[in-house]
Image 1 (cartoon, rainbow, N blue to C red):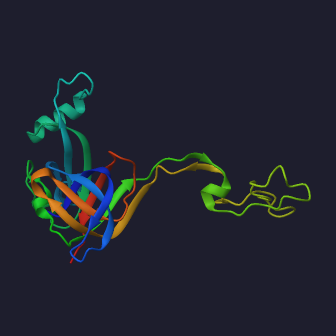
Image 2 (image 1 turned 90 degrees about the vertical axis):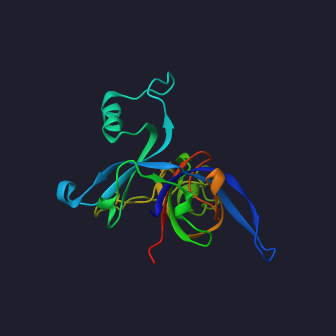
Image 3 (image 1 turned 45 degrees about the vertical axis):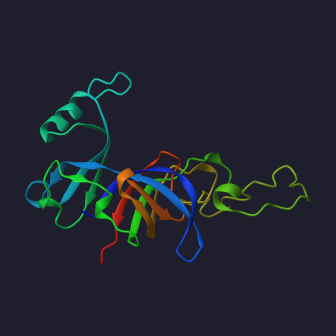
Length: 212
Protein backbone atom coordinates (compact mmCIF):
# COMPACT_ATOMS: atom_id res chain seq x y z
CA UNK A 1 0.00 0.00 0.00
CA UNK A 2 1.54 3.29 -1.14
CA UNK A 3 0.01 5.73 1.38
CA UNK A 4 0.87 6.52 5.00
CA UNK A 5 0.57 9.20 7.67
CA UNK A 6 3.59 10.74 9.35
CA UNK A 7 4.66 13.27 11.97
CA UNK A 8 7.20 15.94 11.11
CA UNK A 9 10.10 15.76 13.57
CA UNK A 10 12.33 18.50 12.17
CA UNK A 11 15.05 19.15 9.63
CA UNK A 12 18.70 18.13 9.36
CA UNK A 13 21.55 17.72 6.89
CA UNK A 14 22.08 14.48 4.99
CA UNK A 15 25.26 13.48 3.18
CA UNK A 16 24.83 11.34 0.09
CA UNK A 17 27.19 8.62 -1.18
CA UNK A 18 29.30 11.16 -3.09
CA UNK A 19 29.59 13.40 -0.03
CA UNK A 20 27.06 15.92 -1.29
CA UNK A 21 25.00 17.60 1.43
CA UNK A 22 21.20 17.73 1.19
CA UNK A 23 18.66 19.40 3.48
CA UNK A 24 16.17 16.77 4.65
CA UNK A 25 12.99 16.63 6.69
CA UNK A 26 12.85 13.80 9.22
CA UNK A 27 9.42 12.19 9.41
CA UNK A 28 8.10 9.50 11.74
CA UNK A 29 5.86 7.57 9.34
CA UNK A 30 3.40 5.11 10.84
CA UNK A 31 2.66 2.54 11.85
CA UNK A 32 -0.93 3.15 10.77
CA UNK A 33 -4.00 0.94 10.58
CA UNK A 34 -6.91 0.86 8.15
CA UNK A 35 -10.01 1.86 10.11
CA UNK A 36 -12.57 2.06 7.29
CA UNK A 37 -12.82 0.97 3.66
CA UNK A 38 -15.13 2.73 1.22
CA UNK A 39 -16.30 0.99 -1.94
CA UNK A 40 -17.98 2.07 -5.15
CA UNK A 41 -21.02 -0.10 -4.43
CA UNK A 42 -21.71 1.44 -1.04
CA UNK A 43 -20.07 4.88 -1.07
CA UNK A 44 -19.82 5.64 -4.83
CA UNK A 45 -16.02 5.93 -4.62
CA UNK A 46 -13.04 3.93 -3.42
CA UNK A 47 -11.00 5.08 -0.43
CA UNK A 48 -9.47 3.96 2.84
CA UNK A 49 -9.42 5.76 6.16
CA UNK A 50 -6.29 5.17 8.20
CA UNK A 51 -5.51 6.02 11.82
CA UNK A 52 -2.23 7.27 13.24
CA UNK A 53 -0.92 7.53 16.85
CA UNK A 54 -3.05 5.29 19.03
CA UNK A 55 -4.61 6.42 22.29
CA UNK A 56 -6.46 4.63 25.05
CA UNK A 57 -10.20 5.03 25.40
CA UNK A 58 -9.90 6.10 29.05
CA UNK A 59 -7.12 8.66 28.73
CA UNK A 60 -8.03 11.65 30.89
CA UNK A 61 -6.25 14.20 28.71
CA UNK A 62 -7.65 12.95 25.39
CA UNK A 63 -11.16 11.56 25.44
CA UNK A 64 -12.92 9.60 22.70
CA UNK A 65 -16.49 10.71 22.10
CA UNK A 66 -19.27 8.20 21.55
CA UNK A 67 -19.48 8.42 17.74
CA UNK A 68 -15.73 7.86 17.34
CA UNK A 69 -15.72 5.19 20.04
CA UNK A 70 -18.35 3.25 18.10
CA UNK A 71 -16.44 3.83 14.86
CA UNK A 72 -13.28 2.26 16.27
CA UNK A 73 -15.12 -0.63 17.94
CA UNK A 74 -16.85 -1.47 14.67
CA UNK A 75 -13.46 -1.62 12.95
CA UNK A 76 -12.03 -3.72 15.78
CA UNK A 77 -9.04 -1.40 16.22
CA UNK A 78 -7.70 0.79 18.98
CA UNK A 79 -8.57 4.48 19.06
CA UNK A 80 -6.38 6.88 17.08
CA UNK A 81 -5.62 10.55 17.51
CA UNK A 82 -5.63 11.26 13.77
CA UNK A 83 -7.81 9.91 10.95
CA UNK A 84 -7.17 10.68 7.29
CA UNK A 85 -8.73 9.41 4.08
CA UNK A 86 -6.90 8.41 0.90
CA UNK A 87 -8.65 7.86 -2.42
CA UNK A 88 -7.04 5.60 -5.01
CA UNK A 89 -7.97 2.87 -7.45
CA UNK A 90 -8.28 -0.54 -5.84
CA UNK A 91 -8.76 0.82 -2.31
CA UNK A 92 -12.02 -1.12 -1.95
CA UNK A 93 -10.09 -4.42 -1.87
CA UNK A 94 -8.20 -3.45 1.30
CA UNK A 95 -9.15 -5.18 4.55
CA UNK A 96 -9.99 -3.27 7.72
CA UNK A 97 -7.26 -3.62 10.32
CA UNK A 98 -4.41 -3.86 7.81
CA UNK A 99 -1.23 -2.31 9.21
CA UNK A 100 0.70 0.19 7.10
CA UNK A 101 4.35 0.96 7.82
CA UNK A 102 7.50 2.24 6.11
CA UNK A 103 8.21 -1.18 4.59
CA UNK A 104 5.88 -0.17 1.75
CA UNK A 105 8.37 2.51 0.69
CA UNK A 106 11.92 2.29 -0.62
CA UNK A 107 14.88 4.63 -0.69
CA UNK A 108 14.80 6.58 -3.95
CA UNK A 109 10.99 6.58 -4.23
CA UNK A 110 9.33 9.83 -5.29
CA UNK A 111 6.35 10.86 -3.19
CA UNK A 112 3.74 13.59 -2.75
CA UNK A 113 3.50 15.11 0.74
CA UNK A 114 0.50 17.11 2.00
CA UNK A 115 0.43 19.16 5.20
CA UNK A 116 -0.88 22.35 6.80
CA UNK A 117 1.48 25.28 6.41
CA UNK A 118 2.60 27.38 9.37
CA UNK A 119 0.13 30.07 10.40
CA UNK A 120 1.43 33.66 10.12
CA UNK A 121 -1.61 35.44 11.55
CA UNK A 122 -2.98 38.69 10.12
CA UNK A 123 -0.41 40.19 7.74
CA UNK A 124 -0.26 43.25 5.50
CA UNK A 125 0.05 43.28 1.73
CA UNK A 126 3.85 43.60 1.73
CA UNK A 127 4.46 40.33 3.57
CA UNK A 128 1.38 38.48 2.34
CA UNK A 129 1.65 39.28 -1.38
CA UNK A 130 5.13 40.72 -1.79
CA UNK A 131 3.94 44.19 -2.83
CA UNK A 132 6.64 46.84 -2.99
CA UNK A 133 6.74 49.74 -0.58
CA UNK A 134 5.49 53.17 -1.61
CA UNK A 135 7.77 56.20 -1.80
CA UNK A 136 8.69 58.04 1.39
CA UNK A 137 7.89 61.49 0.03
CA UNK A 138 4.86 63.45 -1.20
CA UNK A 139 2.68 62.64 1.79
CA UNK A 140 3.13 58.86 1.84
CA UNK A 141 5.60 58.60 4.71
CA UNK A 142 2.85 57.38 7.03
CA UNK A 143 1.51 54.70 4.67
CA UNK A 144 4.60 53.36 2.93
CA UNK A 145 3.50 49.76 3.60
CA UNK A 146 -0.11 50.38 2.55
CA UNK A 147 -1.67 48.77 -0.56
CA UNK A 148 -2.44 52.07 -2.27
CA UNK A 149 -5.67 52.50 -4.21
CA UNK A 150 -7.94 49.42 -4.02
CA UNK A 151 -11.03 50.57 -5.93
CA UNK A 152 -12.29 52.35 -9.04
CA UNK A 153 -14.09 55.66 -9.42
CA UNK A 154 -17.26 55.97 -11.50
CA UNK A 155 -17.31 52.36 -12.69
CA UNK A 156 -17.66 49.86 -11.11
CA UNK A 157 -17.56 51.94 -7.89
CA UNK A 158 -16.52 48.96 -5.78
CA UNK A 159 -13.54 46.79 -4.93
CA UNK A 160 -13.04 43.89 -7.34
CA UNK A 161 -13.65 40.44 -5.91
CA UNK A 162 -10.35 38.65 -5.24
CA UNK A 163 -8.37 41.86 -4.74
CA UNK A 164 -5.11 41.12 -2.97
CA UNK A 165 -5.37 42.78 0.41
CA UNK A 166 -4.24 42.33 4.01
CA UNK A 167 -5.61 39.31 5.82
CA UNK A 168 -4.92 35.95 7.40
CA UNK A 169 -1.80 34.28 6.08
CA UNK A 170 -0.77 30.63 6.33
CA UNK A 171 -2.57 27.61 7.87
CA UNK A 172 -3.41 26.39 4.36
CA UNK A 173 -3.23 22.88 2.95
CA UNK A 174 -0.08 22.61 0.87
CA UNK A 175 1.10 19.69 -1.28
CA UNK A 176 4.77 19.28 -2.20
CA UNK A 177 5.02 17.03 -5.25
CA UNK A 178 7.76 14.72 -6.50
CA UNK A 179 10.13 14.74 -3.53
CA UNK A 180 12.62 11.95 -2.96
CA UNK A 181 13.09 9.57 -0.04
CA UNK A 182 16.81 9.57 0.74
CA UNK A 183 16.93 7.18 3.69
CA UNK A 184 14.65 4.85 5.66
CA UNK A 185 15.21 3.50 9.19
CA UNK A 186 12.57 0.70 9.40
CA UNK A 187 13.10 -0.22 13.07
CA UNK A 188 12.31 3.36 14.13
CA UNK A 189 9.69 4.13 11.42
CA UNK A 190 11.82 7.08 10.30
CA UNK A 191 12.20 8.39 6.75
CA UNK A 192 14.42 11.18 5.47
CA UNK A 193 12.70 13.23 2.77
CA UNK A 194 14.71 15.60 0.60
CA UNK A 195 13.96 19.30 1.08
CA UNK A 196 11.52 21.10 3.35
CA UNK A 197 7.92 20.08 3.94
CA UNK A 198 4.89 22.18 4.96
CA UNK A 199 3.94 22.66 8.57
CA UNK A 200 5.49 23.10 11.98
CA UNK A 201 7.28 20.55 14.12
CA UNK A 202 4.98 17.65 15.14
CA UNK A 203 2.61 18.49 12.29
CA UNK A 204 0.77 15.61 10.60
CA UNK A 205 1.65 14.82 6.97
CA UNK A 206 -0.11 12.74 4.33
CA UNK A 207 2.40 10.79 2.24
CA UNK A 208 1.54 9.16 -1.07
CA UNK A 209 3.89 7.36 -3.44
CA UNK A 210 3.86 8.64 -7.02
CA UNK A 211 2.16 6.44 -9.58
CA UNK A 212 4.59 4.72 -11.91
